[in-house]
Image (cartoon, rainbow, N blue to C red; front, side):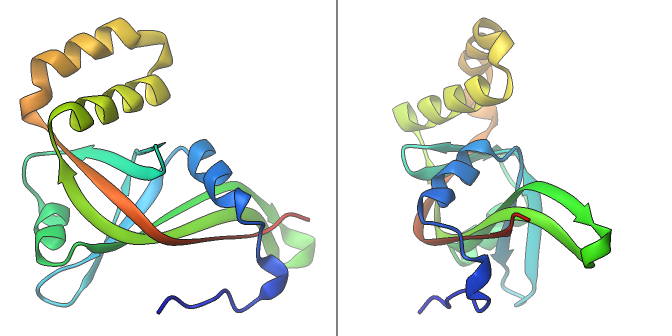
Length: 155
């Protein structure tokens, strides 16, 4: 069902998937809408308990697409560096495939707290207050990863 990486020299060890998902700062979520067009959205995320979580507005394009088709892909890349003399780029990346679903209750709050700890570690008390006051003004989506690969060029 999922394709393998064609250039086997660029395959990174399986442990790289988690390391890259934990260290990446942003990712790109790809969805498909009713019109059949793909839609790629850069966003902040947290990798927590083996899943990818992100928060978003109460409505919007990506949510419409997820409602139509919950199958998504999510791409993260790190450690990029141009290598002009080799006509290439140094990088490490992950592409994860899975199903997206909205979470609520304790899981929603836990995911939002994980996002605060990751993105604003010097502002935890303010982040906790923000979550308590505005939790009903955001949605939290979880990507349950079904398959992920890591590849890169490291030299």
